[in-house]
Image (tube, rainbow, N blue to C red):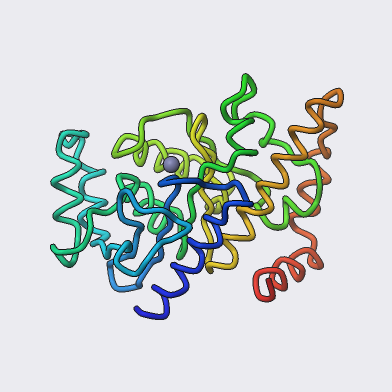
Length: 252
Ligand SMILES: [Zn+2]
């Protein structure tokens, strides 16, 4: 667990770096699957940029998922469930977005998850366009790193209901495309990156940030000229792009 904890702290610090403008103050959260029915998640109220070992709380996956499955459980019970989900009752209260992490680490097939409120992405998600501009691609690298399709969740207050919305979006994506997404866009809120490694999570968020900045610029320059669907499909399935994808995930 210590190696995973160290990697999760370093991923959190990377996401929280002030100049990256992905998260400030207590924004955003991270998690990692420990592979034994528990996961580590950022504690409520802590800051990604300065996260310490004591700011990561180990949580029972089943406890978080059971709350999602029980429609009688609503936000008033959330604090009690978050308290009881801890493997160590002296640990800090896990983030209210713990339920969303549980879904991404189970239904979403991720091993590592990073969620932030990236300024560039939020500028578009909170605009009149919402997530719509992200439904088509502009350049090959975003397809390689962020995946062919993103999942979208309309605005829902953070907590149990948001996690249920993320679960519906992940299920819809799997039904439509046969695989889980690498990116879930929460409208008027921010992105979630689902990765097999901490490097992949950071790469997804950095590429998504670039994608959003380019989108913003094209929207100011007469509008984006999207790649045709067939071109995006081909880039997604080209063997050399698969090779590049594997290399990026290993070396960055
Ligand atoms: Zn958030």
